[in-house]
Image (cartoon, rainbow, N blue to C red; front, side, top):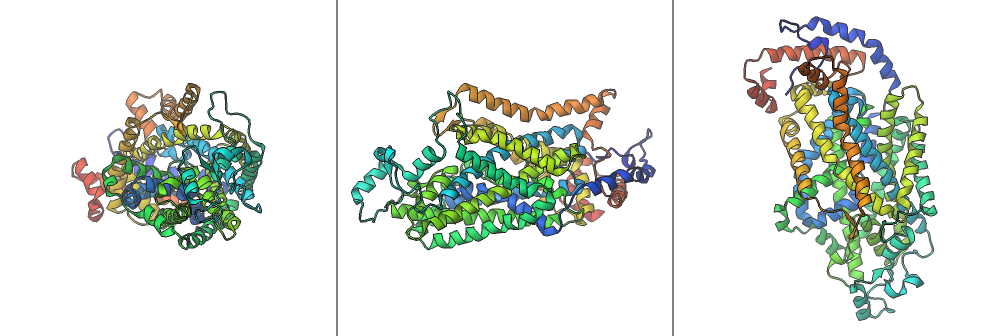
Length: 633
């Protein structure tokens, strides 16, 4: 653990080993013009609520609506909430709080914050790459949502009836078991025949996706209808982000609040449907045997991580636009709690509707009507809506409007993260030009996902470009902050910025529990790796080769930038080179002049207090984690 931490004249040692503190004020004064200029150039939220609303908008997304309900159902139902809540408190909340602190304290993007430890700059670039990957395929899901939204305005829902060409293997989604026109025994028989599919499923696969059986001969050309939907989705993102946080902050109120109005409306409707209680109980009934399975805990960590949108740079970027003394502690607790509550409400809503679907189809086992992943939103839910007797179009429109707004809120955060990183590298370029360039590139790349083989590509990129990478990045990020920069240095920064000391809970999680769990999850992922498939179909070797290239390009950013940083210091002896490469630079810290001066004095006082301690280093560390040093100081 590094206690000196800051490569700054205020904390440097002379040849006799004595601290030279007299240069601290001089350093801060020299940097005053730079910090003032940077502060003026960086935009901030118009008020504190905009940051909170923006964080809710990016964290509450598709993962809450369709990923959490299915993940919970698949991993023990109600019992999944136990590992999920435990993981939320030892991984989710600590990591979220850490990221908002880093962004707000440094007023920097996810790349520039690595002045805290320059050798780890590759973590920021790797997060940048993963963010771009998620941003592009996320927009294609928005295009699918928009396609269904437009189709929902039809006089009759287009997925409610089988088309003539599907007659031999299709069952109308609008048919119900109590329909007078349907023979009950024949209907039940058809539903259980494996070769039979609902019209909602066939509509999604054959009309919307026009999906291929394999991508051995390529992915095909983009569908023009989905391409137009994709274009409209990106235009919405451009309109919201063209002025940076000045424009996205205004939109955050709608993006964060409106989906809840619809979700609560759908929940009220869901619980009033016949069979809804059975569906909700099916979702919540615990399967206690699952609690001891490692896969359940792994699922809890992955769901928590992706649901909160941490480790992709967007949360750091949003918090970097805060005022330096903003109460980010309160916001971190609110966002992480609201995210969990939303997932629970969404689960009850979705499974209430699926319970009604099973009831209408005369099935006792709801397992037969549940689809995983995107299928839950684009097959199971439309299938259930088609059986509504009262204006099914209205509820279809409500659901897909909610999904589209959730998608916009999430992708706006991703684009903001990319744009802010580029703006710091291109300070003279107007932000709207960067936004337009990023979104144009995003649209061009996203067209590959609206081809007949697009879902194959999406699954491939998600697997190699984000799911496998995120735990590596998270492990490096938290290790660099708490072990290399030093837990005490980090705690000092928090105390100075928020005027409050971090409790033992945060300290133990940051230093021990969270890194340990992340490393264990990474190794568990490697050990349990299985060949990637899509819909039970294997990928060609060329696809795996492309995925490996994506994975390596992202991960190798970390050692590449470590080597680059050490080459910059190649004239120094090895030990001094390592020290200079891994310790924070003089650019780390508050960028506002007054705060920076005060922080340098504060750090100098803290360093003197540490030098006055007489206990062994290991004992000092234990005292720090349990807050005993704070009581002594």
